[in-house]
Length: 469
Image 1 (cartoon, rainbow, N blue to C red):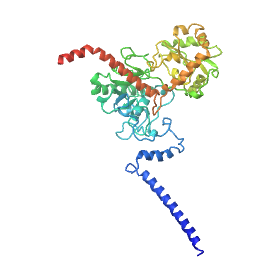
Image 2: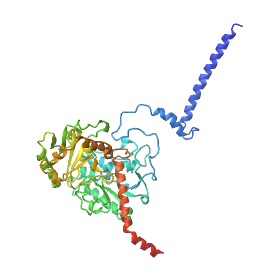
Image 3: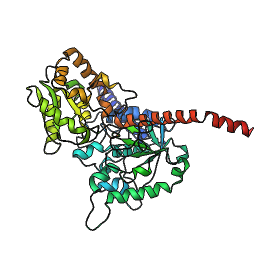
Image 4: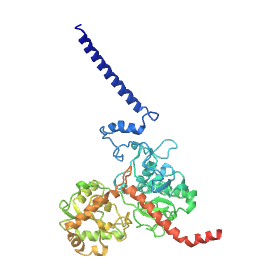
């Protein structure tokens, strides 16, 4: 009789043990149930909420390509659809030697494009000053990623595979890279690779039904380097060009009515808005570093150099991006209140965009300059414009800048910090960055051209309609 309590204790412990074992197998089976896949009884959205939430808290790997996204997306479907995008784009499947092949990329047999969903497979664009005209690279990557899974991006433009459904036809020729790398004649050749590619492009486009349909008016051609497309530009004047400025174009070929001005990619290191040096932390009043002796409109540089070089709070000196020049320029601009953007061989330069991302108030001395997104951005809120004739008067420019009080400068500085992201090129693209802003600018330009066309057709179309009745 005295052994009964012991048996009860043993039975209780055994029951507890069995309950624990049962709970373990229950949890294990539930986990397997969650992980079975699309045929699971548990909706995948619920699985993501429960399981993926724990995975996302794991430490991220520090090994990352320089153009990789900040984090890996959870969703495995395209980030936008044609109904969401403001711009539907048809892109020609040009052979690789027109685009990524110029970067040394070689895909598999019959492969035209790199796998942009795998960042390690994307060829890098060359650095240095080549980068300032790399717009062609970023836009092409963005279009390819618009129909690629697992690439989170902005949703301004999307690739469509039927040209009749497109708002614009995109020509993926890396013309700036072609000029920078392949414009020299090699050996006994009579033409450079750059010239040959342009001639082939003319032949290709002129034979396409898409070009013949509207005479190329709905085509977008990238020619950001001022010397790019020198052979072909005369035959593509009906198309929309993506340019740095109009300095080396006749008005018949390129003009503000039909073409889009895109920013240079800055070559200095950008400044984080939260760590941007304030008025007191910028001891240099005026900063300029670059080529001083230029031709055409750039002769003003040497005039200003002799007027300002001996001033104690002015940094005005020769410099280039090579040999650590970009690093020095970055340090100099973030230490300066005002950065000069003076016309050179052409009205524009990447110096303006270096100043913007350095939050150094740009002083623009270039009477013929055209500016990106100026239809929606008021540059006077973060830049100072000085006519070249006034800037060259002795003492005028320095007196003007020294007279700007801290409060006014700070307001412009705050505005710079807000708009600087609009001038950042990156992959994948983000809402409001340079890639996103360019696509929106193209869309606005198309709307403007359609408005003009519709006005011209008022009476002509009405007459046709009435006669048809």
